[in-house]
Length: 225
Image (cartoon, rainbow, N blue to C red; front, side, top):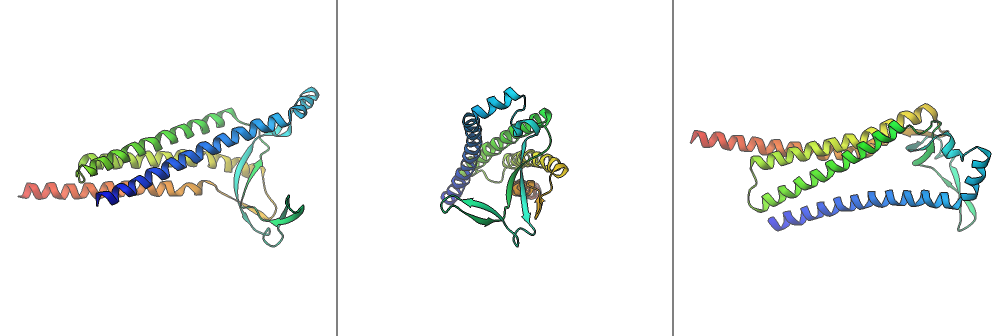
C-alpha cells in the first residue's frame, strides 16, 4: 500500500515541478522574445525616438491576454498566411493578445507582480506540507492532529494562491472590456482557467475535516472506554 501511495505522490510532485518549469520557461521565452524584438528593430526605434514618437506599443498602452468565443467567426472565419504554401488559410481564434488603449499603470504592475510572488510562495508552502504529510504517513502516523493541521495549511495556501492567480485576469478583463470589442468574437474571462486550483484547496479542507471527525470520534470512544 505504501509503495503505491509513494508512487502516486512522486507523480504529483513531478507534475508540480513540470508546472513550475513550464511557468519559468514561458517567462524566459517572453523575455527573450522581447529582447529579440528590440534588437531586430533598433533602427526603427532610433528613427521613432528622433521624431519624438515611440513605437506604437510603447506609446499608447500595453497588451493583455484574452480568451475568445467565436460567434460568427466559425461561419465567416478570419484568415492567416500559411508560410509553407504561401496561401491564406481560414482560422477562428480562441485566445489572443490585444493592445488596450490605456498606458501601463505602475500600481497595477506592482500589484500583479506582488500577487504572483505571493502565489508562488503559497504553492511552495503547500508542496512542503504535502511532503511532510507523506513522510508522516510513511511512518504509519496517519490519523493525527498534526496531519489535520498540515492539510488545513495546504488548503489555505492553495486558496490564497488561487486568489492571487485570479485577481490579475479580472483586472485585465475590466481594462479590456472598457476599450476593446471584437467583431465576430465574444470576450471570455480567463480566470476560469484556474478554477481547478480552487477544487484542490477545497479537497484539502474536506480531507482535513474528515480526518478531524475521525479523530474526535476516536477520542470520544477512548473516553467512553
